[in-house]
Image (cartoon, rainbow, N blue to C red):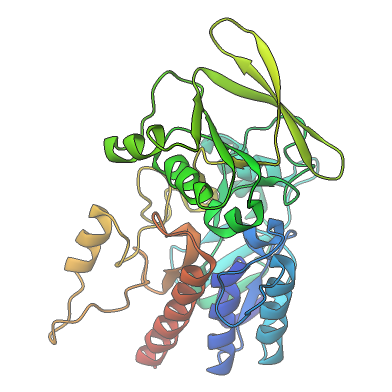
Length: 357
């Protein structure tokens, strides 16, 4: 038999757990689906020093565990399972867990739209796991990775995806940044404040970042650029010690000593389930009424009330479905901003449910 709840939260991490804390304190008794790998990207971060309240920093997994425990303390039911199919066509909204025999989560994460649709259709033949009056989507985003040997093994031990978070741990170290966009330039400049050297590895012969960011990086005395280059292997023992790098033009290879490597080739929002269900932007981020994009501005303009205020800023294109955190955030992508959006989504959901009564 399906579970019923006033509010379901899809996804964990800072936004999902914060939404759960606020919703459970509002006596909504939310059900949160944390996934099989709960906690979001902070589970891969060794130390978090920029989250307020922890003067000595806190390990990412510990922070997520504490948030989860706090949500559970106030009555959130946390289920360590993935939502694999949804039906938002009418209220109450329906959500399913589980997959057909022989199918794993990689299909939903990396499959084609046709493959995903076929799996979802099979899943929806069974009874839904939960039906809810309102939903908060907090499925987050994942860094696009290199998929080279050593990358996964040394994550958190020299491999990082957030220089803003981890640069201070690489004081007087030799560091590398992979990428050519604004994010890579920002990571490079963040590292120059601490590292002895920063080498940018880019597969092309020019950056795609804004001109001003390129100039700052290229002209910085600590920065070197390896053009037309890719990492083929990250090597080490207990931590990163060297990188094997290939030149894409002459196919030569070299091995360089390294203390850290920062992957900055982009994000991929975890929204495969929501294609053709709610409005997403061209990259796949969920559009809400305060999304930092033209689509967000348009949605906001359509929902200004008689007092001149924006109604339910975190609501998606479907009434009663809200979104928060990195699944929405195209710019900041910080734990504290995700937590703040989770708070906003819970407060919006609470008010919207009250208005239904």
